[in-house]
Length: 265
Image (tube, rainbow, N blue to C red; front, side):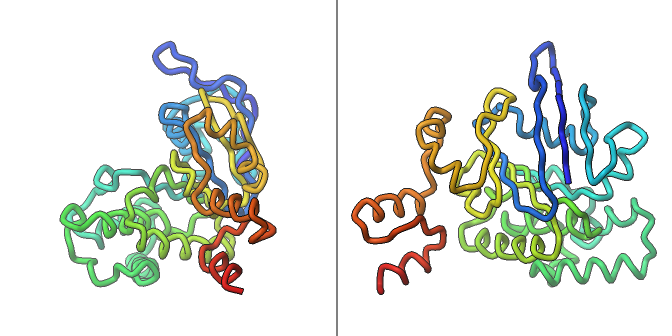
């Protein structure tokens, strides 16, 4: 879905990326993690055409250039950490509609799409509310609705999951997994390694470079490297490793209910 070749980018005479290479497969959930300041958010801005770059980026078989930016943006939905920075209207309805209006959707189609996405996310009852007056969970759900309303092929979450409380986060993750099974490619960018548990593949960045890449089973075995970057293993992975040490289980289990059921047997 996304192929990056020899990406180089500088900002204020500081080299952020130098010959970065990265491939993201279609219809996968991918996590890109790294310490703050390692270049994660800069990469998002480049992918959506906000920053120029040197190198080659292909998104859904289209080379990312100035004259293809508009077409490529239609294929991408982005949710940032702070939803307040994304709001452009005085009601949730108008805010979610903004994306579709810019794409010249018909009025009747706009209403239908908004109804579909807000009911799916559980925020249909707040369409007339001012997005700035909502609670943190609701604000981020509105941003997510705006990112999904045009049926993008790619959803980029730039530290977006951190805004949800644990219960709501679990619900949203399950919804994202459902959408992924229907063909949505999800790119989860985070500094929280717990967010990588849903991933098919993990990229670990540091100082603008990919230092680790692989399936989560492979990445979690690189505990020394992860710790050098300030990451502890996800809680359930660390717990599984300890239980394996005492021969209570024979493999890492990523779901807490499954782990409890296994131990109970």
